[in-house]
Length: 287
Length: 270
Image (cartoon, rainbow over all chains, first blue to last red; front, side, top):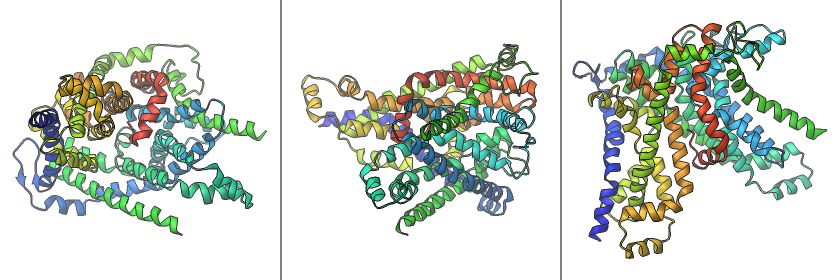
């Protein structure tokens, strides 16, 4: 028994050290940083509640939160609808079934940095692929990334394209658990295909929908490389994301205390939004 | 008839996902005059864009950096991670309960919360501009440990007992008895870890400023932010993106089933 204890401690010791250094210490220190003013060059000084007061009054932070909600308002419904439609199309005997699935999944495995560069070329006003296609249809060039009203929706569409294949696979797994007999029973009652989808399939897919919404929301709050590369947060700060603002506070402005405060605030916002979503999707079943 | 329409619609959807990649590949071989055209076949194919991006930034070095960092992290997560998972699953030792609880709790903490404190830690350790900064915070992964632990719990007790009777030590039991049985979860963890490390960009942007130490996604980002967005700059940027995309697409083509299943089974994206 003593030998087992010893090997257990020995084998888990590196992991324990890792958790202390890179998980528990950062979590604890994030709260300490909120109370500090620190540029990493001169020693940190105690700042009391300055960072929190600044946060509450900081127009850029609130703009970034609003931007994220604009993003989510487009991204979430689009993600769910496109993923459901594609999964539903694939959930039948098909020629080249694994080819279709692999095609939709391809952008998921590509680095976000590469996808963002690719989309900067697709969205380019003069030489972009999308405006090139529009020109063929005699439609004028759209300033996708330079119009304040269009830039964030454009990023939301891009993020949907990047991630939807992942959610297709999740919905496909869910669809395969819907028994065929359920559809047959309701169709015997005279229900149309749509009614059967709406009243049988959709409610049964609720766990998957909750997962899709939760993961997409977390992704939305992590938006960074897309605005960083495509717009730099502009035009008129309409694509500034919280993580991009946090990165700038840490890296460009050397404000560690405030950057950590932004991180803590973001974590709280994510927690609240996820709880609310769970409530809303949970109660949609009862009605 | 309905079936034909269905395939046409599905085909159009697939085009929306594949055509941009093909167009990107084609554009990298086009001359500035042709960039922006919809055609997939350049009139006068040129390697000029590749020559330009290769000359302007150390992409070869970045490729090596990325391979080194992602491989080291993956090996560490598999070897040291399974040692920890094995201990947590099969050995009784003081503190095991706490360690299991903390492993689950850590997964609930958003990465944004720990990003800045971890960054200040790296600065204080003097690790800015070092491989250590890129690797150390990723050498273990709580999700990987949970996946492996879950699997190790299912290995029959009798296998362990007979291995012990043969006088095997714990490490030998782990690597000669458990590992051969755990190929599927090890592959899942390996793919997810490698992809995550290969694609990571925010962390390198924080801790590395020296071009010679940059990873591919980072150098690509830095490279694409310099210069304008005209046709002359666009094609070299896309050529640089190809360095990042081509190895992944090649691996994906052969292993797509594993990629898709490992990501879907755990609910994590790379």
